[in-house]
Image 1 (cartoon, helix red, strand yellow):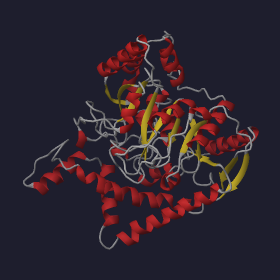
Image 2 (tube, helix red, strand yellow):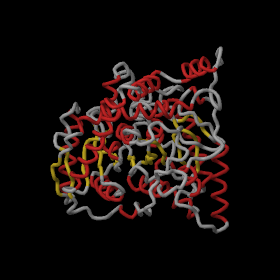
Image 3 (tube, helix red, strand yellow):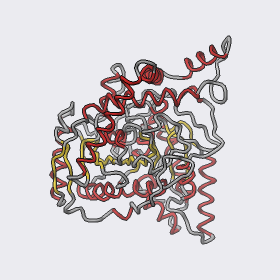
Image 4 (cartoon, one colour):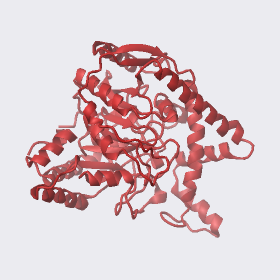
Length: 487
């Protein structure tokens, strides 16, 4: 059998549909690869071998009977552990949800199943998606396949690591302030954060409801485009879900990018970027020019406030959303002397340090006497950040920045300094606050042989622009690098 781990999602689906490969063969090979390699990578928190093989067998039966197969038929897919999966544990990598098994699927999981995707398991993450390194998981850290001493990024670290090492054909992560894009940058894969509302949040356990989005992580742009086409679309169960028809994102692959205006954010690499990132970003601009794109300098004057704004708004929403985890209905319960004491004991034992930190920050920002000074002011600056992007896009079709200021850092390097950790998201936070789509694609390697990512942003609901230019760039640089342990 061909090595399924090295095949693209589109190739796998075609080989299974033609009968060249069977879905069961591919699933068994993936499960064997997980068994052999995930002891080091720890990308998975739960592997559903039985369910995956049953789903794969169903695909093979459908093909044998001449039924039309979905676009993901037989492809092994991993799901970040903050998305509800019927009959499978969903813990958000937190002790407070240990053993919780939802009775329903998230909307995106429904879509993957309907497209024939074979869900092989649930992926490691920072607890409740709060973190940039996967060091906040209550069940142990996922590790970067390029160097196991380094972080895979966060919070979708397990999803990016699994994709990079071939432990799934593709994965679904969630992105609140950069949580699919930054891990993709660190692990040398591609990730798309859609426009806010383009993908339903039904069944996604909430961190910050005005920011959370589900996004695909894949080993190339075409695969990510196919995944996005599967999960995008209106869902009446999500009041923020947009009704606009879904574009054919995959059809944008291979289209000409000559004449596209690419905005280069003024001073983009002045904010603590490693020299290797600065150099890779400069090479990227030359490559885009060679492709026929027109580079235009643009300004985002309020971008420097994005970090402060995010760490008021997101914790405030988290303090409200996480109030439901009290030990009364599901998950962990630590009994106390009375109801209040039970709440305190349960939440004290169930939440990790970073989650507690953000709940306290958010509660403070929303408290009497501080709401106007912090939360309300942050929302006003958020409006200015969104306005900056609108003005920038009047001069360009897309705009670019590095995805992260550094390549993957070593475990423990930043965990003692929350501000240093938060700074890893300085480029991904502004598009999240503005609600616009963005993609991270690999653009080079550091002197240590670690991947570096390029972030491309587009106006609302213009994901097809990201796919077009991302695919053209990926093709031009012939990106085919894999982690040392890949083969």
